[in-house]
Length: 246
Image 1: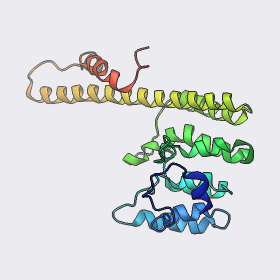
Image 2: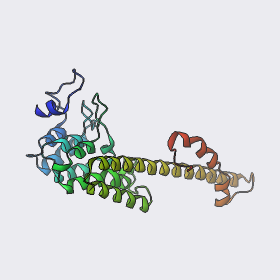
Image 3: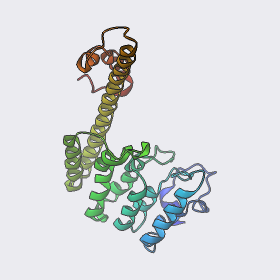
Image 4: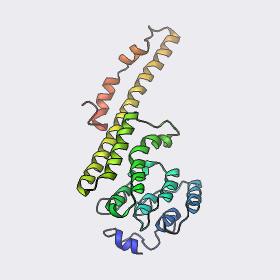
């Protein structure tokens, strides 16, 4: 297994490299990307996702189909698009389980910058940095996406800048900055949702009080001012986002 010899240096010795694809047919198809058809991959994913219980997306090495495809000798954009149809972009954030710290799928792509087609690079980076905002909420059965339009435009600009940067060190720096900004946006979105939840709880409390005429009911603005969201956010903030109060 040449892939194992080249890529798994430092792995725990008890992991079974020879039979690693036996229970992961999607990974196997991605590994043999040069001969895999889109329909074969689509059918394998559909079958895999129909199983009960749902099978893990990572194999014993922590590799996802994205890892395997993007580290294969012939990564193909058409197969990448098939995977993106069925897995949320958040899977692109998952790291494998190697002893030297683990890598995301995009890390494999960036390490082979000069031999990977630019359209494939752009598709992966936009899926990782931009589509994440549009699809990540699918996990909770919502098609609304999240984030302000300006945030999405910012992430798309950053993704395109990474693709256009020829210098490896500057490219690595742009990638790190983009990920930091994306995580900041996610945390800000989480804080906004928490604030709205506290406000809604205060409004529902008003409805119950109004039913029994226990006190004067606050209007929406007053409910927001007196819901205690400022206290809740200040307590939660240190655990979520160092940027929120900047």
